[in-house]
Length: 310
Image (cartoon, rainbow, N blue to C red; front, side, top):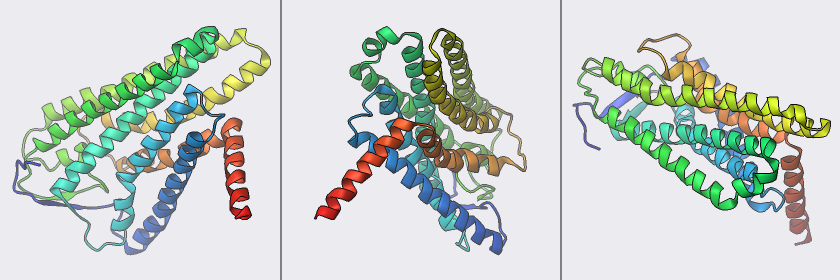
């Protein structure tokens, strides 16, 4: 990566400098990260192995769990390791890689949530045409487009980051590398870059949130014409999606749609956005979804039975 500066490494401030609190941070976020990995891998393996979870909804849930897995991995391991490190040093190249990964998988999660909303809209509002509209080929094309869109977004972000000149202080008041904390260290007027950041990341977060909320309002409105059992099943699925959308986009909009100002809660909001949400998603989608729970029970029961026979 070509450097436009004399800085070869950055020092991350982390969440706290207090030794006792650092140990608490290490323990808490190690548990969170392990839980995220186990939960999302469980969903990925279950959907991949189960014949009953072949519908488009679970096809998209597979990629949501994969995006969560990678999104959390882009920040959580360094946060956990740095909590016990006396000096939290990250090289320039590692920092830029983290910016790219953070936005690649974060944007992918946004696009997958939109695709899941589209799937629910077609399933509930156009049930007779659902198999035709949401065919396997269509789902694959939509996922490929989501990956392409995410790559374009993260490429735009990394180009902005690489153009920032760093010639002075290299202390990042954060636990990870992202454009917002990096802008504070850049030796130039960052007004236009922040405007580009808001028009890119901020616009994606805000417009996606509006689209998702409108789609779910339309879906909920159309449920009036369904039977009581159909409404209950549809509401259960949509409620899970709406909870995930509100949790994810609330923090995303707070971080990326405002002027370059700093608030005391910024790091905690970022923690919930990058680590908390990927941890909660598997719980939300499994605890509220009987089909996923039943598929998991069958899958692991078969594996335990086969192991015991050996």
